[in-house]
Image 1 (tube, rainbow, N blue to C red):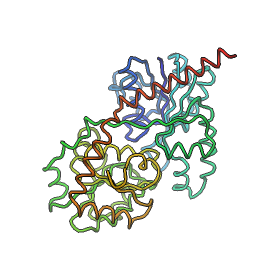
Image 2 (cartoon, rainbow, N blue to C red):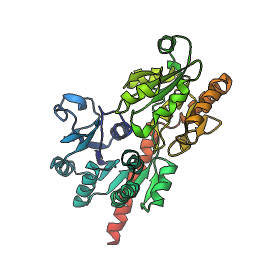
Image 3 (cartoon, one colour):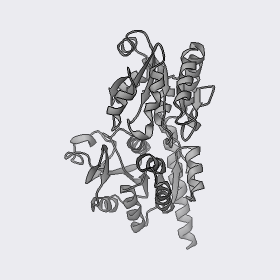
Image 4 (cartoon, one colour):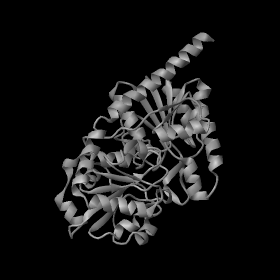
Length: 381
């Protein structure tokens, strides 16, 4: 099967869209398929054979010109370019995979329609929630755009039950569930590192961690109360526009910046508890990575975490944007080592079957369904 993956982000970017697109490309190659990635350019070297950030990509990558989003340079927005259409025409795909379509993905949808190629759109970003956060309004307009984009796809894949319900409630047609995988070999409890723990918490404190982008929609400032708990050290992993303000909002917290790969896995395993605060997560991959690392989780009872965290078994779900609830949930788990350990053990067991290979095969099954439906339509015509 020949597949063009049109994605709004791709490594070296560090975010959920980029990671999922990379894992999708890897799995397709592993199964003998022929993917091509089209993504925004980030550096002058991107796209040159054998050089730059794409040298280690599992398949060819075509980069289109882009500009950094004003005020948020970690996010790049693709500019109009003929490269996308040329790449699709040259690759002759059986299907076009649109990863979190917004700008480049919308153009990818149009190109797929022009060539009569079926398109699968992966819903991954809560644009309506972002509109509320950054503009204070515009939620209805965001949903109109989401509906218009995804209604043009042969199939939309939602990462969680909550996202699927939201899409259906806003009249997005042809939606199915497709969750995300987790690398249970990389993320595992055995990587717990005593020397790292001494470095992060020199006075023997229990360590509460957050991993993710440091941006307003994540509401990381809700961990301020956790910073005030006796015998607790808060560790923040990630980067983003909220980094300066969070330094003031979270007194005593340790900021480690962006970490990836085995280094990130070692940090996860060396925590005592993972806390996530974002109320707009369509899936929340960092919660799943924490669970694979054997950690109990505190997360808001909304969006993706509802599918991941079994309240009272693998962690605690709290009302979204409730700082007091976050602090009390963390405090109760840290005060009960046996319960904390039981939650962590169950969390690891819960995600052991959620490999990228397993969910990648599910994705290929969705592709096959779309192609079969197109074939039936063609025969009927």
